Image 1 (cartoon, helix red, strand yellow):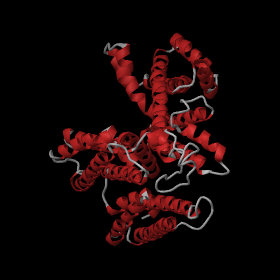
Image 2 (cartoon, helix red, strand yellow):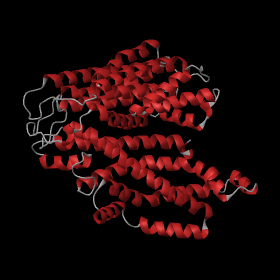
Image 3 (cartoon, rainbow, N blue to C red):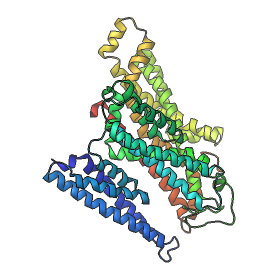
Image 4 (cartoon, rainbow, N blue to C red):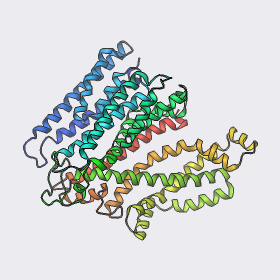
Length: 490
Protein backbone atom coordinates (compact mmCIF):
# COMPACT_ATOMS: atom_id res chain seq x y z
CA UNK A 1 0.00 0.00 0.00
CA UNK A 2 1.25 3.50 -0.83
CA UNK A 3 1.49 5.15 2.58
CA UNK A 4 1.10 8.63 1.05
CA UNK A 5 -2.58 7.92 0.36
CA UNK A 6 -3.30 6.94 3.97
CA UNK A 7 -5.49 9.46 5.79
CA UNK A 8 -3.72 8.67 9.08
CA UNK A 9 -0.32 9.35 7.51
CA UNK A 10 -1.44 12.65 5.94
CA UNK A 11 -3.02 13.78 9.21
CA UNK A 12 0.12 12.83 11.14
CA UNK A 13 2.35 14.74 8.70
CA UNK A 14 0.15 17.83 8.97
CA UNK A 15 0.21 17.64 12.78
CA UNK A 16 3.98 17.15 12.74
CA UNK A 17 4.59 20.25 10.57
CA UNK A 18 2.25 22.35 12.72
CA UNK A 19 3.90 21.06 15.92
CA UNK A 20 7.36 21.95 14.62
CA UNK A 21 6.18 25.47 13.78
CA UNK A 22 4.64 25.92 17.24
CA UNK A 23 7.76 24.52 18.90
CA UNK A 24 9.97 27.01 17.05
CA UNK A 25 7.65 29.86 18.03
CA UNK A 26 7.83 28.80 21.68
CA UNK A 27 11.61 28.51 21.43
CA UNK A 28 11.75 32.10 20.20
CA UNK A 29 9.61 33.22 23.15
CA UNK A 30 11.61 31.34 25.80
CA UNK A 31 13.32 34.57 26.75
CA UNK A 32 11.37 37.37 28.34
CA UNK A 33 10.02 40.18 26.20
CA UNK A 34 12.75 42.47 27.44
CA UNK A 35 15.39 39.95 26.37
CA UNK A 36 16.45 39.19 29.92
CA UNK A 37 16.91 35.83 31.68
CA UNK A 38 15.08 32.78 30.36
CA UNK A 39 11.62 32.12 31.77
CA UNK A 40 11.29 28.75 33.55
CA UNK A 41 7.60 28.40 32.66
CA UNK A 42 8.26 29.00 28.98
CA UNK A 43 11.14 26.50 29.06
CA UNK A 44 8.74 23.91 30.48
CA UNK A 45 6.10 24.55 27.81
CA UNK A 46 8.73 24.48 25.09
CA UNK A 47 10.10 21.18 26.44
CA UNK A 48 6.61 19.63 26.47
CA UNK A 49 5.94 20.76 22.89
CA UNK A 50 9.32 19.46 21.76
CA UNK A 51 8.64 16.09 23.42
CA UNK A 52 5.27 15.70 21.72
CA UNK A 53 6.81 16.77 18.40
CA UNK A 54 9.42 14.02 18.75
CA UNK A 55 6.68 11.55 19.63
CA UNK A 56 4.77 12.67 16.53
CA UNK A 57 7.91 12.03 14.47
CA UNK A 58 8.11 8.51 15.84
CA UNK A 59 4.43 7.92 15.11
CA UNK A 60 4.94 9.00 11.48
CA UNK A 61 7.84 6.58 11.05
CA UNK A 62 5.84 3.72 12.58
CA UNK A 63 2.80 4.43 10.41
CA UNK A 64 5.00 4.49 7.34
CA UNK A 65 6.73 1.23 8.29
CA UNK A 66 3.44 -0.54 9.03
CA UNK A 67 1.85 0.52 5.76
CA UNK A 68 4.88 -0.48 3.71
CA UNK A 69 5.41 -3.85 5.41
CA UNK A 70 1.90 -4.92 6.36
CA UNK A 71 -0.41 -2.73 4.28
CA UNK A 72 -2.22 -1.61 7.43
CA UNK A 73 -1.46 0.17 10.69
CA UNK A 74 -0.82 -2.21 13.58
CA UNK A 75 -2.80 -2.04 16.81
CA UNK A 76 0.37 -1.20 18.80
CA UNK A 77 0.99 1.84 16.60
CA UNK A 78 -2.60 3.01 16.98
CA UNK A 79 -2.23 2.68 20.75
CA UNK A 80 0.39 5.46 20.67
CA UNK A 81 -2.50 7.78 19.84
CA UNK A 82 -3.63 7.52 23.46
CA UNK A 83 -0.21 8.78 24.59
CA UNK A 84 -0.31 11.57 22.03
CA UNK A 85 -3.68 12.68 23.44
CA UNK A 86 -1.72 14.08 26.38
CA UNK A 87 -0.68 16.89 24.03
CA UNK A 88 -4.03 18.46 24.89
CA UNK A 89 -2.43 19.47 28.20
CA UNK A 90 -0.22 21.97 26.33
CA UNK A 91 -2.91 22.97 23.85
CA UNK A 92 -1.56 21.23 20.75
CA UNK A 93 -4.85 20.69 18.90
CA UNK A 94 -3.03 19.45 15.78
CA UNK A 95 -1.38 16.53 17.56
CA UNK A 96 -4.57 15.76 19.48
CA UNK A 97 -6.67 15.67 16.30
CA UNK A 98 -4.09 13.38 14.67
CA UNK A 99 -4.19 11.14 17.76
CA UNK A 100 -7.99 10.80 17.62
CA UNK A 101 -7.68 10.09 13.91
CA UNK A 102 -5.09 7.37 14.55
CA UNK A 103 -6.91 5.65 17.40
CA UNK A 104 -10.00 4.80 15.40
CA UNK A 105 -9.47 2.53 12.41
CA UNK A 106 -12.93 2.82 10.85
CA UNK A 107 -14.33 6.32 11.11
CA UNK A 108 -16.97 8.39 9.40
CA UNK A 109 -17.77 12.08 9.52
CA UNK A 110 -19.79 11.66 12.74
CA UNK A 111 -16.70 10.50 14.62
CA UNK A 112 -14.57 13.38 13.28
CA UNK A 113 -17.29 15.90 14.17
CA UNK A 114 -17.54 14.43 17.68
CA UNK A 115 -13.77 14.80 18.11
CA UNK A 116 -13.78 18.45 17.07
CA UNK A 117 -16.86 19.09 19.21
CA UNK A 118 -14.93 17.93 22.27
CA UNK A 119 -11.73 19.79 21.29
CA UNK A 120 -13.63 23.05 20.80
CA UNK A 121 -15.22 22.82 24.24
CA UNK A 122 -11.92 22.01 25.92
CA UNK A 123 -10.16 24.94 24.26
CA UNK A 124 -12.94 27.35 25.22
CA UNK A 125 -12.59 26.19 28.84
CA UNK A 126 -8.79 26.50 28.75
CA UNK A 127 -8.85 30.03 27.29
CA UNK A 128 -11.62 31.18 29.62
CA UNK A 129 -9.76 29.74 32.65
CA UNK A 130 -6.96 32.26 32.09
CA UNK A 131 -9.29 34.86 33.62
CA UNK A 132 -8.60 33.27 37.01
CA UNK A 133 -5.23 35.06 37.06
CA UNK A 134 -6.79 38.49 36.49
CA UNK A 135 -7.50 40.92 39.37
CA UNK A 136 -11.22 40.12 39.11
CA UNK A 137 -13.53 37.99 36.98
CA UNK A 138 -16.97 38.44 35.46
CA UNK A 139 -20.03 38.09 37.70
CA UNK A 140 -21.18 34.88 36.05
CA UNK A 141 -17.72 33.40 35.55
CA UNK A 142 -17.97 30.50 38.04
CA UNK A 143 -21.44 29.21 37.03
CA UNK A 144 -20.55 29.66 33.34
CA UNK A 145 -17.33 27.66 33.74
CA UNK A 146 -19.19 24.90 35.60
CA UNK A 147 -21.73 24.77 32.79
CA UNK A 148 -18.96 24.56 30.18
CA UNK A 149 -17.27 21.74 32.07
CA UNK A 150 -20.55 19.80 32.29
CA UNK A 151 -21.12 20.35 28.56
CA UNK A 152 -17.61 19.11 27.74
CA UNK A 153 -18.13 16.00 29.88
CA UNK A 154 -21.27 15.29 27.90
CA UNK A 155 -19.34 15.83 24.66
CA UNK A 156 -16.82 13.23 25.86
CA UNK A 157 -19.65 10.78 26.51
CA UNK A 158 -21.13 11.63 23.11
CA UNK A 159 -17.76 10.94 21.46
CA UNK A 160 -17.62 7.48 23.04
CA UNK A 161 -21.22 6.73 22.03
CA UNK A 162 -20.72 7.97 18.48
CA UNK A 163 -17.52 5.94 18.13
CA UNK A 164 -19.37 2.82 19.26
CA UNK A 165 -22.90 3.22 17.89
CA UNK A 166 -23.17 6.36 15.75
CA UNK A 167 -21.14 5.31 12.70
CA UNK A 168 -23.41 2.52 11.56
CA UNK A 169 -25.74 2.93 8.60
CA UNK A 170 -28.73 2.49 10.92
CA UNK A 171 -28.60 3.84 14.45
CA UNK A 172 -30.79 3.09 17.46
CA UNK A 173 -33.71 5.43 18.27
CA UNK A 174 -32.20 6.24 21.67
CA UNK A 175 -29.39 8.08 19.87
CA UNK A 176 -31.97 10.77 19.16
CA UNK A 177 -31.62 11.77 22.82
CA UNK A 178 -27.88 12.26 22.31
CA UNK A 179 -28.56 14.22 19.11
CA UNK A 180 -31.10 16.43 20.85
CA UNK A 181 -28.71 17.18 23.70
CA UNK A 182 -25.97 17.98 21.18
CA UNK A 183 -28.27 20.49 19.51
CA UNK A 184 -29.00 21.98 22.92
CA UNK A 185 -25.30 22.36 23.78
CA UNK A 186 -24.73 24.25 20.53
CA UNK A 187 -26.04 27.38 22.31
CA UNK A 188 -22.45 27.72 23.56
CA UNK A 189 -21.47 28.53 19.97
CA UNK A 190 -20.07 25.06 19.32
CA UNK A 191 -21.25 24.63 15.72
CA UNK A 192 -19.66 21.18 15.54
CA UNK A 193 -22.25 20.00 18.07
CA UNK A 194 -24.99 21.51 15.90
CA UNK A 195 -23.78 19.72 12.76
CA UNK A 196 -23.19 16.43 14.58
CA UNK A 197 -26.66 16.46 16.14
CA UNK A 198 -28.21 17.28 12.76
CA UNK A 199 -26.29 14.45 11.08
CA UNK A 200 -27.45 11.92 13.68
CA UNK A 201 -31.08 13.02 13.40
CA UNK A 202 -30.99 12.86 9.59
CA UNK A 203 -29.51 9.38 9.73
CA UNK A 204 -32.14 8.28 12.24
CA UNK A 205 -35.19 9.68 10.46
CA UNK A 206 -34.04 8.60 7.00
CA UNK A 207 -33.79 4.97 8.05
CA UNK A 208 -30.04 4.74 7.49
CA UNK A 209 -30.01 6.16 3.97
CA UNK A 210 -28.63 9.59 4.89
CA UNK A 211 -25.13 8.36 4.11
CA UNK A 212 -26.06 8.68 0.43
CA UNK A 213 -27.49 12.19 0.76
CA UNK A 214 -25.67 15.28 -0.47
CA UNK A 215 -25.39 16.71 3.05
CA UNK A 216 -23.68 13.60 4.41
CA UNK A 217 -21.42 13.27 1.38
CA UNK A 218 -20.20 16.84 1.80
CA UNK A 219 -19.32 16.26 5.44
CA UNK A 220 -17.68 12.93 4.65
CA UNK A 221 -15.39 14.62 2.14
CA UNK A 222 -14.78 17.68 4.32
CA UNK A 223 -13.93 15.60 7.40
CA UNK A 224 -11.15 13.87 5.44
CA UNK A 225 -9.60 17.24 4.52
CA UNK A 226 -7.09 17.95 7.32
CA UNK A 227 -6.43 21.63 6.60
CA UNK A 228 -10.11 22.38 6.02
CA UNK A 229 -11.09 20.85 9.36
CA UNK A 230 -8.29 22.76 11.09
CA UNK A 231 -9.54 26.00 9.57
CA UNK A 232 -13.12 25.18 10.52
CA UNK A 233 -11.98 24.34 14.05
CA UNK A 234 -10.35 27.76 14.46
CA UNK A 235 -13.45 29.54 13.11
CA UNK A 236 -15.82 27.57 15.35
CA UNK A 237 -13.51 28.07 18.32
CA UNK A 238 -13.48 31.84 17.79
CA UNK A 239 -17.26 31.86 17.40
CA UNK A 240 -17.73 29.76 20.53
CA UNK A 241 -15.36 31.86 22.66
CA UNK A 242 -17.12 34.98 21.37
CA UNK A 243 -20.47 33.60 22.54
CA UNK A 244 -19.17 32.33 25.88
CA UNK A 245 -17.24 35.54 26.58
CA UNK A 246 -20.53 37.24 27.41
CA UNK A 247 -20.42 35.28 30.68
CA UNK A 248 -16.76 34.35 31.19
CA UNK A 249 -14.92 37.57 30.26
CA UNK A 250 -15.29 40.99 31.89
CA UNK A 251 -15.82 43.63 29.21
CA UNK A 252 -14.47 46.38 31.46
CA UNK A 253 -10.97 44.87 31.26
CA UNK A 254 -11.06 45.48 27.51
CA UNK A 255 -12.43 49.03 27.45
CA UNK A 256 -11.80 50.75 30.79
CA UNK A 257 -8.49 52.49 31.48
CA UNK A 258 -6.27 51.07 34.22
CA UNK A 259 -3.38 53.45 34.74
CA UNK A 260 -1.81 51.11 37.29
CA UNK A 261 -1.15 48.47 34.63
CA UNK A 262 0.09 50.48 31.65
CA UNK A 263 2.20 48.61 29.07
CA UNK A 264 2.55 45.44 31.12
CA UNK A 265 4.45 42.62 29.30
CA UNK A 266 2.68 39.30 28.63
CA UNK A 267 2.02 37.33 31.83
CA UNK A 268 -0.55 34.94 33.27
CA UNK A 269 -2.72 37.86 34.37
CA UNK A 270 -2.38 39.55 30.98
CA UNK A 271 -1.44 36.83 28.44
CA UNK A 272 -0.96 39.37 25.62
CA UNK A 273 0.12 42.28 27.84
CA UNK A 274 -1.63 45.63 28.27
CA UNK A 275 -1.76 48.72 26.08
CA UNK A 276 -0.90 52.34 26.85
CA UNK A 277 -4.22 52.73 28.70
CA UNK A 278 -3.75 49.61 30.83
CA UNK A 279 -6.38 47.61 28.97
CA UNK A 280 -5.93 43.83 28.61
CA UNK A 281 -4.96 43.10 25.00
CA UNK A 282 -6.01 39.46 25.39
CA UNK A 283 -9.55 40.46 26.39
CA UNK A 284 -9.67 43.04 23.61
CA UNK A 285 -8.74 40.43 21.00
CA UNK A 286 -11.38 38.02 22.33
CA UNK A 287 -14.09 40.67 22.17
CA UNK A 288 -12.75 41.88 18.83
CA UNK A 289 -13.37 38.44 17.36
CA UNK A 290 -17.09 39.18 17.58
CA UNK A 291 -16.74 42.22 15.34
CA UNK A 292 -14.57 40.43 12.79
CA UNK A 293 -16.92 37.44 12.58
CA UNK A 294 -20.12 39.53 12.56
CA UNK A 295 -18.93 42.10 10.03
CA UNK A 296 -17.22 39.48 7.86
CA UNK A 297 -20.26 37.18 7.95
CA UNK A 298 -22.95 39.80 7.33
CA UNK A 299 -20.94 41.66 4.69
CA UNK A 300 -20.65 38.34 2.86
CA UNK A 301 -24.24 37.20 3.38
CA UNK A 302 -25.78 40.41 1.97
CA UNK A 303 -24.02 40.26 -1.42
CA UNK A 304 -24.63 36.49 -1.59
CA UNK A 305 -28.38 37.09 -1.29
CA UNK A 306 -28.64 40.28 -3.38
CA UNK A 307 -26.07 39.23 -5.96
CA UNK A 308 -27.55 35.73 -6.10
CA UNK A 309 -31.03 37.04 -6.87
CA UNK A 310 -29.79 39.50 -9.50
CA UNK A 311 -27.57 36.87 -11.10
CA UNK A 312 -30.38 34.32 -11.12
CA UNK A 313 -32.79 36.72 -12.82
CA UNK A 314 -30.15 37.76 -15.32
CA UNK A 315 -29.08 34.23 -16.20
CA UNK A 316 -32.57 32.73 -16.41
CA UNK A 317 -34.48 35.41 -18.34
CA UNK A 318 -31.53 36.60 -20.46
CA UNK A 319 -31.74 39.11 -23.33
CA UNK A 320 -32.99 42.53 -22.18
CA UNK A 321 -33.13 41.59 -18.48
CA UNK A 322 -29.58 40.27 -18.68
CA UNK A 323 -28.30 43.40 -20.42
CA UNK A 324 -29.92 45.81 -17.97
CA UNK A 325 -28.81 44.01 -14.80
CA UNK A 326 -25.30 43.12 -15.90
CA UNK A 327 -24.47 46.50 -17.42
CA UNK A 328 -25.50 48.23 -14.18
CA UNK A 329 -23.39 45.76 -12.21
CA UNK A 330 -20.49 46.34 -14.61
CA UNK A 331 -20.57 50.01 -13.66
CA UNK A 332 -20.41 49.03 -9.99
CA UNK A 333 -17.72 46.42 -10.72
CA UNK A 334 -15.51 49.03 -12.41
CA UNK A 335 -14.99 50.82 -9.09
CA UNK A 336 -12.46 49.05 -6.77
CA UNK A 337 -14.26 47.67 -3.75
CA UNK A 338 -12.00 49.23 -1.13
CA UNK A 339 -12.25 52.67 -2.77
CA UNK A 340 -16.03 52.39 -2.95
CA UNK A 341 -16.11 51.43 0.74
CA UNK A 342 -13.93 54.42 1.66
CA UNK A 343 -16.18 56.74 -0.35
CA UNK A 344 -19.36 55.43 1.29
CA UNK A 345 -17.91 55.67 4.79
CA UNK A 346 -16.53 59.15 4.12
CA UNK A 347 -19.96 60.27 2.96
CA UNK A 348 -22.12 58.67 5.66
CA UNK A 349 -19.72 58.38 8.61
CA UNK A 350 -17.62 55.67 10.21
CA UNK A 351 -19.64 53.12 12.17
CA UNK A 352 -20.30 49.40 12.11
CA UNK A 353 -23.52 49.55 10.07
CA UNK A 354 -22.01 51.76 7.37
CA UNK A 355 -18.93 49.52 7.28
CA UNK A 356 -21.09 46.44 6.60
CA UNK A 357 -23.05 48.23 3.87
CA UNK A 358 -19.88 49.61 2.29
CA UNK A 359 -18.24 46.19 2.09
CA UNK A 360 -21.44 44.51 0.91
CA UNK A 361 -22.22 46.81 -2.01
CA UNK A 362 -18.81 46.41 -3.61
CA UNK A 363 -19.03 42.59 -3.49
CA UNK A 364 -22.44 42.23 -5.17
CA UNK A 365 -21.18 42.07 -8.81
CA UNK A 366 -18.82 39.11 -8.24
CA UNK A 367 -21.56 37.00 -6.64
CA UNK A 368 -24.03 38.01 -9.35
CA UNK A 369 -21.60 36.83 -12.04
CA UNK A 370 -21.08 33.51 -10.25
CA UNK A 371 -24.81 32.86 -9.93
CA UNK A 372 -25.52 34.01 -13.50
CA UNK A 373 -22.98 31.57 -14.95
CA UNK A 374 -24.37 28.67 -12.91
CA UNK A 375 -28.01 29.49 -13.76
CA UNK A 376 -27.27 29.75 -17.49
CA UNK A 377 -25.76 26.26 -17.35
CA UNK A 378 -28.45 24.63 -15.20
CA UNK A 379 -31.46 26.23 -16.92
CA UNK A 380 -30.74 24.27 -20.10
CA UNK A 381 -30.77 20.85 -18.44
CA UNK A 382 -33.44 18.25 -19.15
CA UNK A 383 -35.33 18.42 -15.86
CA UNK A 384 -35.81 22.18 -16.26
CA UNK A 385 -37.16 21.66 -19.79
CA UNK A 386 -39.47 18.97 -18.40
CA UNK A 387 -40.78 21.38 -15.77
CA UNK A 388 -41.49 23.96 -18.46
CA UNK A 389 -43.31 21.35 -20.54
CA UNK A 390 -45.51 20.51 -17.56
CA UNK A 391 -46.55 24.15 -17.31
CA UNK A 392 -44.67 25.04 -14.12
CA UNK A 393 -44.28 28.81 -13.68
CA UNK A 394 -40.95 30.51 -14.31
CA UNK A 395 -40.67 31.75 -10.72
CA UNK A 396 -41.15 28.25 -9.34
CA UNK A 397 -38.68 26.77 -11.81
CA UNK A 398 -36.10 29.45 -11.09
CA UNK A 399 -36.11 29.35 -7.30
CA UNK A 400 -37.15 25.74 -6.69
CA UNK A 401 -35.30 23.84 -9.40
CA UNK A 402 -32.54 26.08 -10.75
CA UNK A 403 -31.23 28.21 -7.87
CA UNK A 404 -31.13 25.33 -5.41
CA UNK A 405 -28.80 23.47 -7.76
CA UNK A 406 -26.56 26.53 -8.13
CA UNK A 407 -25.86 27.09 -4.43
CA UNK A 408 -22.66 25.03 -4.29
CA UNK A 409 -20.55 27.49 -6.34
CA UNK A 410 -21.95 30.38 -4.29
CA UNK A 411 -21.03 28.67 -1.01
CA UNK A 412 -17.51 27.97 -2.25
CA UNK A 413 -17.13 31.53 -3.51
CA UNK A 414 -18.38 32.96 -0.21
CA UNK A 415 -16.05 30.81 1.89
CA UNK A 416 -13.07 31.85 -0.22
CA UNK A 417 -13.87 35.59 -0.10
CA UNK A 418 -15.00 36.03 3.49
CA UNK A 419 -11.34 36.22 4.48
CA UNK A 420 -11.04 39.28 2.25
CA UNK A 421 -13.97 40.82 4.11
CA UNK A 422 -12.14 40.27 7.40
CA UNK A 423 -9.01 41.95 6.00
CA UNK A 424 -11.06 44.86 4.64
CA UNK A 425 -12.77 45.30 8.00
CA UNK A 426 -9.47 45.47 9.85
CA UNK A 427 -7.86 47.64 7.16
CA UNK A 428 -10.62 50.25 7.25
CA UNK A 429 -10.58 50.27 11.06
CA UNK A 430 -6.80 50.68 10.96
CA UNK A 431 -7.34 53.76 8.77
CA UNK A 432 -10.00 55.11 11.12
CA UNK A 433 -12.82 54.40 8.65
CA UNK A 434 -14.21 51.24 10.22
CA UNK A 435 -15.94 50.62 13.52
CA UNK A 436 -15.91 53.26 16.21
CA UNK A 437 -12.44 53.79 17.81
CA UNK A 438 -13.61 52.90 21.33
CA UNK A 439 -14.81 49.44 20.25
CA UNK A 440 -12.20 46.66 20.65
CA UNK A 441 -11.75 45.53 17.05
CA UNK A 442 -8.65 43.88 15.64
CA UNK A 443 -7.92 46.75 13.22
CA UNK A 444 -8.28 49.30 16.02
CA UNK A 445 -6.02 47.24 18.30
CA UNK A 446 -3.44 46.91 15.53
CA UNK A 447 -3.51 50.64 14.83
CA UNK A 448 -2.80 51.42 18.48
CA UNK A 449 -0.08 48.78 18.70
CA UNK A 450 1.68 49.99 15.55
CA UNK A 451 2.93 53.06 17.42
CA UNK A 452 4.77 50.80 19.89
CA UNK A 453 6.48 48.44 17.45
CA UNK A 454 9.97 49.24 18.71
CA UNK A 455 9.30 49.28 22.46
CA UNK A 456 6.29 46.96 22.93
CA UNK A 457 5.97 45.00 19.72
CA UNK A 458 3.51 42.50 21.21
CA UNK A 459 0.78 45.15 20.99
CA UNK A 460 0.85 44.82 17.20
CA UNK A 461 2.04 41.22 16.85
CA UNK A 462 -0.90 39.52 18.58
CA UNK A 463 -3.78 41.30 16.76
CA UNK A 464 -1.85 40.88 13.51
CA UNK A 465 -1.52 37.14 14.13
CA UNK A 466 -5.23 36.92 14.94
CA UNK A 467 -6.13 38.49 11.59
CA UNK A 468 -3.71 36.24 9.70
CA UNK A 469 -4.96 33.06 11.38
CA UNK A 470 -8.63 33.87 10.79
CA UNK A 471 -8.06 34.67 7.12
CA UNK A 472 -6.01 31.48 6.69
CA UNK A 473 -8.76 29.50 8.43
CA UNK A 474 -11.40 30.77 6.01
CA UNK A 475 -9.12 30.07 3.04
CA UNK A 476 -8.43 26.52 4.26
CA UNK A 477 -12.15 25.95 4.76
CA UNK A 478 -12.87 27.37 1.31
CA UNK A 479 -10.41 24.95 -0.29
CA UNK A 480 -12.07 22.03 1.48
CA UNK A 481 -15.57 23.14 0.50
CA UNK A 482 -14.44 23.59 -3.10
CA UNK A 483 -13.19 19.99 -3.16
CA UNK A 484 -16.41 18.74 -1.56
CA UNK A 485 -18.94 20.81 -3.53
CA UNK A 486 -17.41 21.63 -6.90
CA UNK A 487 -18.70 18.97 -9.35
CA UNK A 488 -15.72 19.54 -11.65
CA UNK A 489 -13.40 18.21 -8.93
CA UNK A 490 -15.45 15.15 -8.00
